[in-house]
Image (cartoon, rainbow, N blue to C red; front, side, top):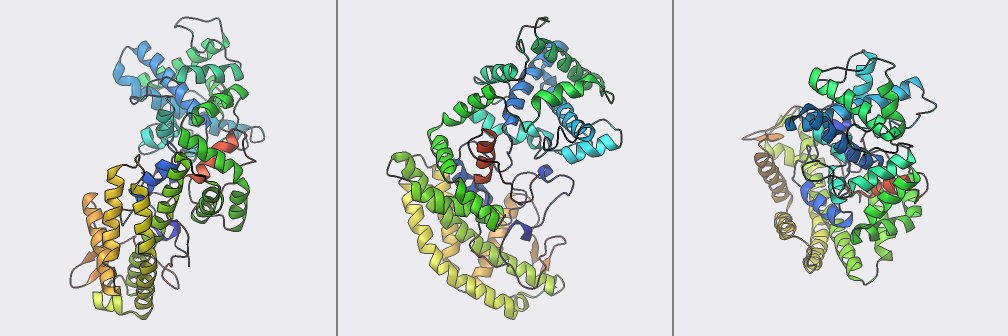
Amino acid sequence: MPLSAAALPYATPHDPSEDAPSSVDPLGTQTDSERLADVLLPGFTARMWKLRFVTFSAVASFVADRVVAALGREEFRLDARLGFERLYVSSLVRAHEENPSAFGRAPDQLPGRRLARAALLAEEPLTKGNFLQGQAINGPFGVMARLTRHLGVVDDESRPGRSATNLVLDWAVDEGLPGILDNEGSREGAGAQWKSEVCRAVSAHVSRSDWPRRGHRIWELLARPLRPDVLGKREKANLSLLIQADSLRQRMMALLTDGQQAYATASNRDGKRGPVERHVLLHAVAPALGSEPVDRLLRATIDMSSAYEDLTGLLQQAFDAIRWTLVLMGGRATPQAVLGHPVTKAQLARTVVELRRVIPEFTAARKTLSQQPSIRPELLDALDRLQTDATGCGAPDTLAETVMSRHHRVQKAKRKADWVDRDSHWTLMPGFGISGEAPPSYQGSWMHPFRVMNAYSALSDLGKVSAFQEVSDGEA
């Protein structure tokens, strides 16, 4: 069976977006895949889907400014932003519940929507206690934070950035809210009135824990102009210019636009993120690259990403074979019994053979990548360490020792317990096993997200490609 995210254990079941980024990474390979993805699509992340959340973030930063000024306490800034966000998420869930035909897809890919719906059905306010764990990073503002900072929409302290004013003004024109950024006290424009009412509701929620009743005007005020599935003409143009301001991102978005047929083909054939993103990058983007400096950097990064995914997939394959065998043996067995199991022994032997093919490709790709001046040394150092680990896997027993030792180092650095306790017997910790008729096998799928899907979602929001076709990767 192919290796995929489904082979890894998940954390909390409430909302997929509650889980911290990279929370499940037993061999410590997620960080460097993210560094490679950062080169291809700067600012994008695997958790960002709706570009409207960029605009929402800008609006939220201005609302927090106004609430802080009204309350006279700077320490309320984060609370104001999070309170506004809870009201916003609840407004969209309410709008969908009350008018599903008009708001049919508005809550799609909205972080926290399930928790907000549960609170609504229970007739409870949405609070810090019953909303997203780590809301500051897992809510609509948080999942877009890297991109909004890249675009200058918010600054490092989550205040309005250099691009925020023009973006909010364009959004306000589209939504019929002129005067949105008028000075405090102005009541002359619909935007000024909107902001005043919203800030009053946020201030009351933050300072007194007030929660608007069902049917309150605030719900429509938030849901209609900020629904995630609709962007106005001026807002689209503004966001498009901001995204194109980075030369690498501009080039990649153009290549992905031209390669949308490859994306559609891969999505229809497989439907999972790993195979889809691999197909697009290797068979649509890479062949279209030329000899310009930006294209050379993209080619080197794609080649390195492909070799990286091949290598890390094989190491994960070996680690998963051990976990699978321990489940088969009741969760505890001697190392000799685990490694001597016929299926596991054959799987590890095949992995060793495949590593011998992949390591030279990895070495060559790393050398080419190192010739790109913009590549940071810490990425190259990490690739060297990974190559050293893999090069020592010349036999099944050394492969097993390598992946188990690497896992121990990774877990120790994270201050977490190993998934397998090793002494005279190997004991699999509860919740970390793999079931199935056979251990997972690596078959050309990429384990780590490279944000291609997220870029297509953005291109769809901007009207650059046909309707975005979601694939099933377990995300909200």
